[in-house]
Image (cartoon, rainbow, N blue to C red; front, side, top):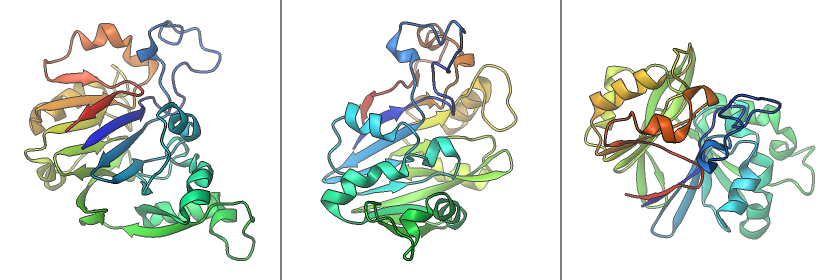
Length: 253
């Protein structure tokens, strides 16, 4: 299995428009972060988890010519607003499967009514195949995927475990029974927004405590804001098995 970090930034990305913060002015390419998303590939299958406003740029940067579907964690704009840019895949492949909680599907129907509406559908719009997710295993290609139910402040968000790889973003709390689903995972990706506490996201300390409890072989931090600090400096302070993910990083599990 190969995982490509398409984007590792928070909702505004890094650099933030108009910001003079030192991290936003950094020349280190690892400090330039598009909105958060990953591409998960195995055998002949290829799925994207979330498609935010930078989706087109991410697909071009990684020479992605085919996807088998899009899996959504939740409905926030930085995770969904690239849905229209599945059009090139639709034109070549036909209807594109999407997978999401019923609440997220409802939000997508409202936001992209011209895609979902049979009456007012624009002729150039893509078409999708809706798959409603509940907190139970489901199948992508030839692989069983297990949702991890988490909370983003008061909003339910799904993380996903693909065999030995687990991806959790926009996380603040995870119940004990959901943490048990991560037992013996080899690679864990989890959000770490910044140093200071936040009402809806793990900060760095909370992310590291979570990683220490789960005990993966390796862990990667994502959904990062400029307030976490410089990539090169912060990574030096981390445990040996914990790394800061960066855009276009590829890992093999």
